[in-house]
Length: 82
Image (cartoon, rainbow, N blue to C red; front, side, top):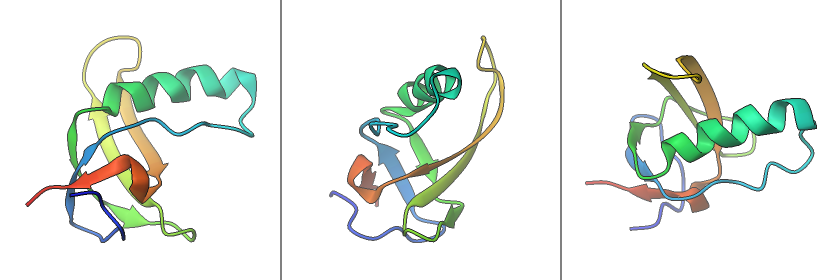
């Protein structure tokens, strides 16, 4: 079921990558790679930003993107899990 409104604690599956318009070229490459890493994964919503986007905090354990990450995603890129 496509998520219509983000809610803290809700478990979701990431279904897409935002356009990332307005980002500098320097940050766009890594940000896109992090978002692409998320596609298909299940995550729990950690917070809601001022625009109503879901905030996700997660760790990538291996590879060049290894580390703690925090992203904000529009509900249209999330599917609610029951």
